Image (tube, rainbow, N blue to C red; front, side, top):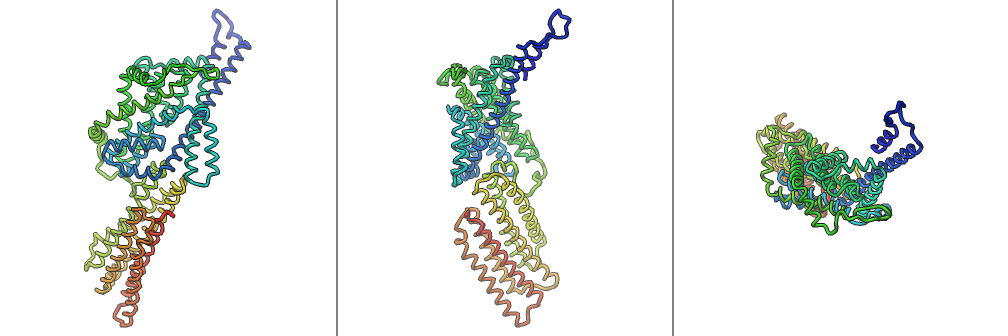
Length: 593
């Protein structure tokens, strides 16, 4: 656009010492304007198209890799400890898989927000994410740019016609790689057009990292571009395209890459808005970590560039003529090395001071005196971007529902046996049932939103099973509260279960609680043989209920049991039967097939 404007102004500028309003445009002027406008249009279209394909390729590569490495990814996140080195390694591996430091840091903010991850753990993972994101640059070092389209086409055929789900997701990941290189090739071709626009090329040349101010200016531009695009990988691709075509120098590209490290922090920062105190601390650390790193590396920028050039096999300024166009083939590797070595050095420096940074963040963002979470669950919509981890989050909430139902059965046994029921315990029982109702609602909304996205078959199947289990656990809590209501209603009417009936109900409660605990344990372990393992406990509950019902009906012939007590007792047996049925439904939902 600048080239066109300059051309038009040149054609319309006022001649000196002339009384005419403007100089007449010649045919040559018109041709120049048309040619430059055409070149500019081709440049913009090529950049936008190439960038779009590049970003779509990164997304497909990320989703394909997540689906293939899903179970391993979940285990790694769950295994993160307070060991800062191990947490950093996990951050590196996870980011290499998801192909985006932004996704990893947003995911970490979500985990911290939900209380699953401590701040010190999050700091380690965030630092590792900054190293993991440099893998994109090394992928682009591969000399397969012109083969991107055939790779894309071949993988697309496998993706469309393959029956195996795992093969389809491998094909999606490879298809993403092909799109990345095809998009990069389109951007390189578009950038070569800049040489046909002298004024546009001169504008790019004005950004030189030949002084400290120039380095800061280039870093600032890289930061702004990454903030706008919301992807450091995209701006890295543009930077490599410009540098490999000779539009900008290697030093300028290196400064732009440093600034991109700051720009990528905006995603996690936005994700922390409205989050808990610890989540905001994690996001602020990401900003401080990258800003401090860029400040110290720009201070020694000249020596750092000398180091990178010394480490490189070939000269970064070596020109190569390909199809009549000048390229700089060694600059891509140099830019990737610049990005990686900076982040590794920054992580090594920060690893020494993790405890101090935790204290600093606690001071910067003080804790609040009230409960910060407006919801009952730890579910966080930020994790919906990574379905394999989102499904793990909802699984944890269902485990909480399982524990809640077990506790309710224990409280019920206490209340039945008390001569004067503990009001506090009874209120806690009813409150827990209401909480489980709300948790089920939140899980239903969360998992339904998850199901609306593109999921691997295994994740979609688990999501549907989780919806069923949440409903079953909520139903169990309803029947437990009903059992307490039967006892309280009799007490209000001046009646009570007999001592023998109370003893029978407590025994039945114990057997039902044991069965539910076995089912819950199988759920936590992911035991596909849960039906076989818990069958004996299930039969004990059913046999006990039949025996008690038969015995009670025989006792009715004596006429000593008040009708209301009889009705309440039979209703209690039916309620325990429903608890057993719903527990069995949960057991049937646990196996993946």
